[in-house]
Amino acid sequence: MEWSTACPDWAQRLVDRESIIPPPIFVDEAERALAIFMELRVPDLPGKPRMADCCDEWVLDYVRCIFGAYDGETGRQLIREFGLLISKKNTKSTIAAGIMLTALILCWREEEEHLILAPTREVADNAFKPAAAMVRADEELSAMFHIQDHIRTITDRTTRNSLKVVAADTDTVSGKKSGKVLVDELWVFGKRANAESMFMEALGGQISREEGWVIYLTTQSDEPPAGVFKERLSYWRDVRDGKILDPKTLGVLYEFPQQMVVGKEYLKPENFYITNPNIGRSVSAEWLEDQLKKRLGSSDGSLQKFLAKHLNIEIGLNLRSDRWAGADHWEAATESGMSLESLLERSEVVTVGIDGGGLDDLLGLTVLGREPGTRRWLHWAHAWAHQIVFERRKDIASVLRDFESAGDLTVVDRPGDDVQAVADIICDIRDRGLLPEKFAIGVDAAGIGDIVDELTTEERGIVMEQIVAISQGWKLNGAIKTTERKVAGGELVHCGSALMSWSVSNARIVPQGNAITITKQASGSAKIDPLMSTFDAVSLMALNPEGAGDLQGFFDNPIMVGI
Image 1: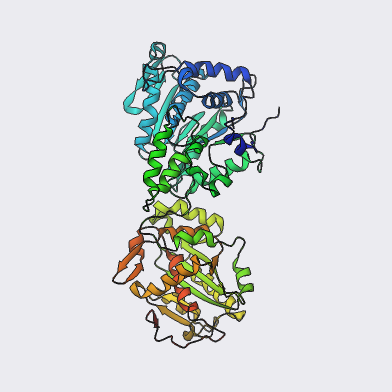
Image 2: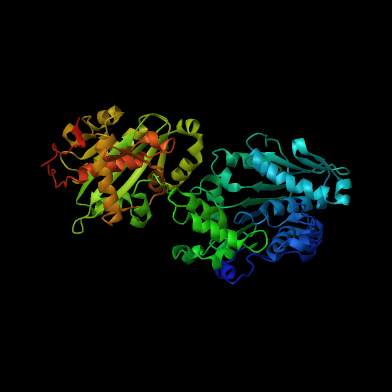
């Protein structure tokens, strides 16, 4: 039997208000489940209407698709993974409760546990309450099921099958043998480094349950997508677009087509329906319009979060009111396809910036080249991290793993391996004749002893005249301003690495007299090492080096202090 979960014309279908959900594979199974689902009542609506009376057609299509992928003759579920990306307030929790109760009622096993996995206790409570309320609102279901609020469990009195809601931050998921699992708010799990192993535990029971499935429900993230959320969202998009043929996976993604995102057509109220299929029911178009107007002039990041949550606009740079001015122009300065090798081939001279801290910090390297003729500055950056950073900085561990997968971050096991890798790159630049003979390598004066020791060994051959300690604090003001002007004016282009975009978005401006500073302390646990190494490289490129380096005015520059 053949079927497809691809929907290559999804963009036009959403614009035309057509379904992006495929029809059920087995119609009889779909209608049997749908009949149960539609009889469930929604207690938090006036009159406690049935699902059949208050659900839009897309909800019914989604239920048909899930349960209609079950082959009753063989006992096999043909589509095993479902993803639903939808804006807030489109009855996600109600849908989750209805689907899992329907699965519980239809379950032919005994002593079977169905699982809703939530990232936090609060989300778990929000998922359990609608399901429990649906049972209490129906006399037949109340007689059929026993509700235990304190452990968030609903149990069939006869078969002992159960629906359990688990909070990942307080409850354990190890040892679960659930055939049917629903993961709520996947975007929150994306911020957790251990989410993948948690899912493996929760889904482990499906190895012996061919009728099993998993459903991931989510809105867009309030930060740039990361971890398991980023990974699965990307995979669902590829399956939807037909780039990956995987009929066992279905992603139903209510998001704006790219051309509408580029044209900012999501700001038009007449287009709100694209990511809000429940508009006019559980979603008020007037409320969305009013809230959007209030945030259009804001500069504290609230607009980006509103767009992410209510219109599914993916956040790129997390812009805030205290952001570095260059962040507004950073993404537009991307030159796709630029690599370190192509940068070196196109450059007439190169300066290097290095910034790093302890074992739980990143070591950032920036290579900044100047293109002959155009005299544009070409930017490439990389970072290294020790394994210990994933233990001490768990709040950003999943993000760092994404950078590692993308090739922007290298993780080393032994201290010193990162320093050697940096030295290898610098010596390659020197061997190509691109490194100035003096004032070529800018470093943060703090914590660079190992780097200087490695570079100045007899084997490396870098001389002390090539290394410059760049004063930080207010003395870095000139480099900060130069960088933002170059980026805004299109005179500095970069390779578009996610690592640098993240570093740029983390930077926080602190006024200091007539100057501004960007410090690691102001940025908190979020890392800005690659951006700081960029300022170090810019400090030297601003001297207009030519071959051996144009040294005039160097010692008059207040941001420079020689080692």
